[in-house]
Length: 528
Ligand code: B12
Ligand code: SF4
Image (cartoon, rainbow, N blue to C red; front, top):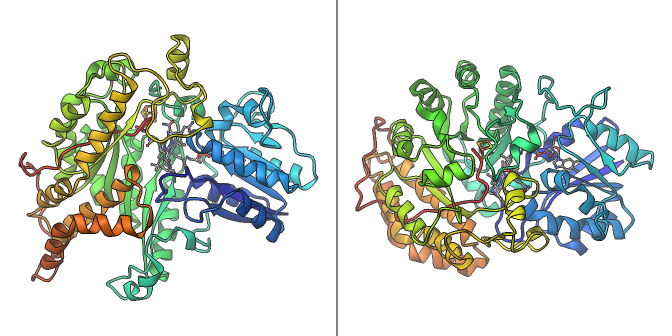
């Protein structure tokens, strides 16, 4: 059977990294079947496009996975595939919570022939076998011999054949310059960010998050050896293609068991398996100096921290009281002193937020080492405790907000401000943090660091800017480059100076307030 696994885009921003589920299910597919992958973020496709693709490539089964915000597009694509007579199976967090919606059992149209609930590592081979026999069931649920919910232990994790997978669609280096950049240093002909998981589950149960409900509060880890081998295989691939690969450890909380994380990082160092990596770690787990040393020595470059709010009342309200805003600065300085920086995620529209929440947040951010602040709105995702609480209180204004995805738009009424005011807070955070002046200040705050660090923060800021200000078309790029020309010219000039690229000792950042970037803000439902 020829199977297509398709991941929809959200129609607004482009994802910088492919989704792990596609590679994982591809690796778990029984032999005798061919699996092709299409990520809508990398290969834009509409309904007519997918129908044509399915017919042209003689696809016999389509698997679609989606988060809530992509589900409307996912359903439209599924409808188009089913209209040409090819069955569709859907999986992922949204349909796990809303299986009746996908199967048309809630009074709406049916979009999927079958739905895979929860983690599909064990059910996927069964689904494929049933589809091959033309006997798909409506629902596939991971259960043990006694009918109890069962979760993969991750001890027998499949080998994802990174060395041979076609990753062409996920190269972040434009084709036009690939050949030239292959010749620079160890090679920059390609740059890919690859998702790797080392464990699943998070016991914290933050009110807005689906993770504790979906993956359960029992945490499971792969063996160190299997993670190390995966990193070695990625490194080998980067060498072969004269390019670069960075890893995103997609674990919800990469240091949830500090002892185990340290042991993994030590093994990575021992095996020489270091690659540049990003991971999500909650602030409370970054108090440990030895852990932070190991993060830096094993290749850790960016840590995603779900700070959510600087207001302890807000944090308590969403069951995230373990975040202590009083220690945010210290945590970030601990990282920055090892040249590890943070993606700091904030949520506005929480129950204790009032007008000015963004500026109050920014005032603090300006005293921190430079990082990548992101801002979002509190979003009631289906089946979360937050959704249930707001529904009960009659506060949902768009109870089925996913049916028409609108980026950065609230779906409920905040308590101490209006919906429009909450939207303005997010707008303020993004525009202040990613203005040309803010970008220049972030670069300047690293003036005593090797040029590479300044180029790094500048490029990372430009990429993150695209989350809120999508770069549609060439003119948007030209305008953005023109606005930032002073910083670009300065970096280019410095690039020609002797020793500009040489390393400098790590240091603690005391970023001068006047120089610091402005602004900040949040992503809804931020992990960790
Ligand atoms: C990595 C990640 C990201 C990455 C991007 C995704 C990527 N390229 O990998 C980044 C950091 C950019 C990101 C951003 C966001 N994310 Co995110 N992200 C994750 C994270 C941590 C890991 C995803 C992952 O790979 N998991 C491991 C794989 C193995 O699990 P899985 O994807 O669920 O797949 C399994 C099953 O679901 C099933 N399955 C999945 N698809 C399919 C399809 C078929 C056909 C079948 C049969 C089975 C199947 O089988 C798989 C194996 O068991 C998850 C949390 C989590 N632990 O999953 C959140 C999560 C997916 N994100 C979430 C959210 C809300 C967001 C944001 C909206 C908000 C934010 N924090 O900024 C943005 C939106 C981005 C966008 N493009 O619009 C939510 C989604 C909840 C929901 N109901 O939609 C999650 C669950 C976390 C949470 N807080 O609740 N995210
Ligand atoms: S937001 Fe992060 S810390 Fe909280 S439950 Fe979700 S994954 Fe765990």
